Length: 309
Length: 142
Image (cartoon, rainbow over all chains, first blue to last red; front, top):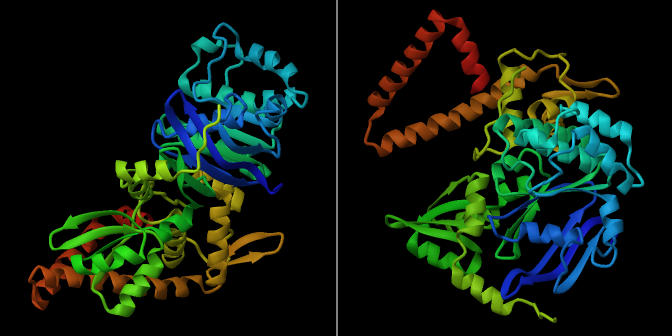
């Protein structure tokens, strides 16, 4: 159990009648940089809120650094660096003031380190928070999230609203200051191609469930588009997991999981086919847009959720 | 050493980096014995996961293009240029076969295809003659 920094087991969470998480199961190994992907409204921020003990789950188990955030919220927050999606800070404070303001909340706060990060991230210490740019605001939030030397860092869509140059700089900071020191980073995003260079692993959340969890490069090897005749595609329907399919003249273009095995089988059967490599956005789309509402509905019925309130 | 990463490409990032290092070796821009940037440096420069860079280096060490000297870093191997040239030849053959297949599908015959290749070649050579810098850029980005 202890090799995981974060564990979710069959977690459910509803807001009134709206189910947001439905039996979400997820494990994040220590030391990994883990990207949590999903469309807007997929449940990413809700899952993070549960991890930080800001929300109460309806069912399932959650462990963050081996602690249950529902019963030990303060201890979790002490040991985790957290950057919220809408990092709102007191606008009237100067950056330097908020650093001193935050310090007493954390027993492990290292003020020298905070000042060093502020310098590295080019945060203007004498400026009032309300006058910071979006990029400076995120970076200040990151200084506040890192200065107590957390072993796990949870970032909710940190790249949101950053321009391409700031995003690259942000990725660099992530690589140098977090990956370089062997810390676990969990961050959410809806931009697959942005997380690809940085993440060790990705998990795709859709309709409150993890539809795929894999190493970034494995995902690319595993999911491919294959064009073949309609009859051949019909044969495959029972053997392969098809994520998406569209007609293409006399042929069908299907997107499959376990592509190497499928391709091998097609070759052995001597079935004419063409393989196309996909980029990560296309793979993501196949997972979240290829799912029809009926499928989601069946999964909802079949889901293990028993809401007890 | 300039390495370009194309985001959102169908080519995985590790392959993009490996191919470009191989191209730099083949063209002589990286000569045998040259010291490669450290995993940390290159990861930071490209804003790419350190494990990805490490895997690329390890793969290229296995392929004999790079060598890791203990405590000193990673270097371009002795016969890297020769190795990459044969690998590039193989890849180019594959690409030309792909082009030929497309040509045949369009109903072109051998003469038409030869003519197109000759024309393309002339264009490239003319460009290279008029501006030596362009050639360097073609090598680096492709």
